[in-house]
Length: 590
Ligand code: ADP
Ligand code: MG
Image (cartoon, rainbow, N blue to C red; front, top):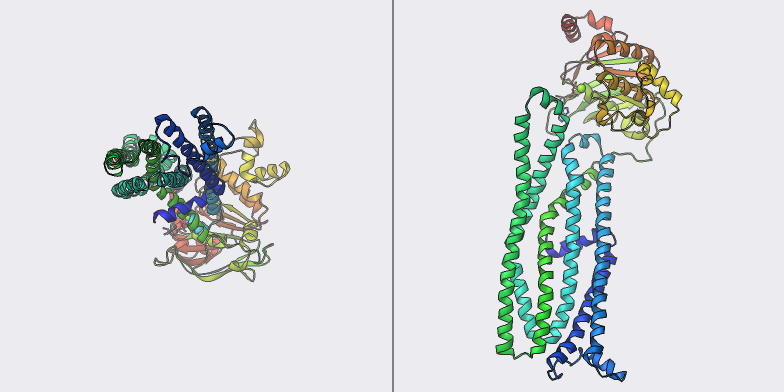
């Protein structure tokens, strides 16, 4: 990306027009201040005013003469002071606006990224690492904002340079040319460092991502780390990743220092060069030389800041790219939820799978192959099969989270693809294989933003055998269940998951291995709950323990992505086949 198109990135900055306006304002007032200095210096040196007071530097003395005041130093200096103060004021306002814009940009890019993520398909979200995501939203977004601010500051420098150049050209075009040559030359010498730092920027994002992924996993897996006593292993892993992430950052700073040194040396050299040429060959007047040196001295620190910003831009630009990529990719993966699709109200007859295939990867093998079955309304359908058979994938297809690679799913006579997905999902109660809770109150976690009357909530808690537990809570529904529901037991979490699904008043209730991690007492309670609800909903249950599905109207046996058997418990248990084998091993273990 060339520098010019990078400068256009300023458009991403909120209030960028105001920021540019203020930059121009401060440039003008600074130039104005310097132009006033010319007569001051001339009069200080006591030199003939012949050269210095030629247009355009003679406006103030002439203005004063017009007013009948002799243009002495004591009259000119207050004007210089006011001009300087004005220029500082413009810079102050500009910095203020820039600081506000910076945080607006940060909030904006974070909002956009998280909004787009939430709106995208499950298929895409499944692949996103939570560690990487938190790194991108927290750290990389800060750096992205930094890169945009760097662009703004560079632009501010360029605008100032423009005004300085205008003044310098009026003072002495020969000296100005030498100065421009020096700047361009130093720019070229630092090009290799700029390229290097950009590559460090890319590496920095990668290492930060890796470190964050690990941090998230470690914090989730603390219990296993303690139980297995693998602290040393985890520590050394974190140490290495942390070292890599910080090492890149330090390399960026070292190179920055190196570049500063290079440029300082070159500028000092250039200054001497300019002085020699001016005195020896151009016979520039001392007043012009003084003003010129003054300008060079004012520009030099700004030039270093510019160089620092240039550097910072290239070091932080990869973070901006990463966030843009996240935003764009999620946009491409938006869930189709157009309003013109048919609204789903209720299941009337059945759900039908017709020759459905599903593969996660276009090039990969099908995870589900030629699936055909019906799920009639109000029936209790169970799905069983070895782990990895494709049961959860099948459920994701029913819920519209995944779209068949081949074949179709019909909800009554309507293809699931042509239904408004949100209206369909509203009618689904889902209990996932791993219970999912958010840090917050019990109520928030089961009702979300729906204002459900307390009576209904208590009824649901009663169905899932959580009434006693609820009664033991002092804070009642406001009880904080902690991150991921860690203040609840495994069994409580699973039953609460079911209560949450019931409270949606679903037309279809789907449970994915809801009993897998229950102890036998919780399982019994769960069984009671299941029996209570089985006739009220179209119930689809993935089951591990076959005792809980004895009352199913239909059991679908999946094996390696295909339906190998189908029928009632009675029928399947008495037919030789996968179900009978699985059942036998289960009853033997228990
Ligand atoms: P089950 O729920 O029956 O245990 P799943 O439906 O979760 O099985 O998985 C079925 C198969 O799909 C497994 O072989 C699994 O490895 C594969 N699979 C699951 N998720 C993905 C994914 N995101 N990408 C690729 N393969 C996947
Ligand atoms: Mg599963």
